[in-house]
Image (cartoon, rainbow, N blue to C red):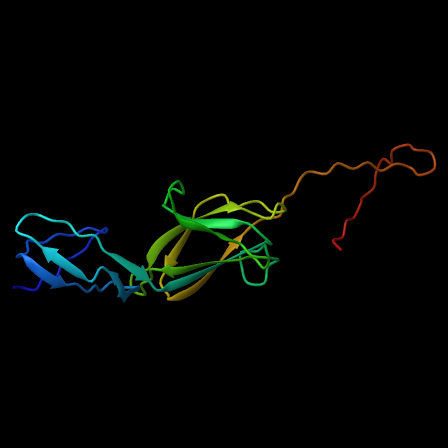
Length: 181
């Protein structure tokens, strides 16, 4: 009986094989080969199919805050999910954004040479910030990676009047200064 190496591209591959029982192993950048399931395959004299799974080993920490950089005021709740490039197909379970703005995705693929391009979409926020409007692309090149995503505070136009306190007529020229507390 022969040994076979099947090249997988976009999750698919094929080979003409002799019938028999085979032990199966896998090698894929950013994946843990010991998580392959199943680890055996029986080829018959007729065409067959096999379906295997492999778990990735990367961890992505998404930090949602007002600056999109380290140190910004955090978004205090919400959720985010992995999607396709368009943001319409969701993969896996949405992750909660915790009180300090952090959402963590574990078991993601990564590759230092050619980073895996993954996409995420923010589903909700804490109610005082605007949800990130697009798809969030992440090039997963490290086994542990952190990305910052900006959520802008909700703003609305404010209209003011300034009147004379004693007689009530409008003050024709003045400037009001507002200082955040």
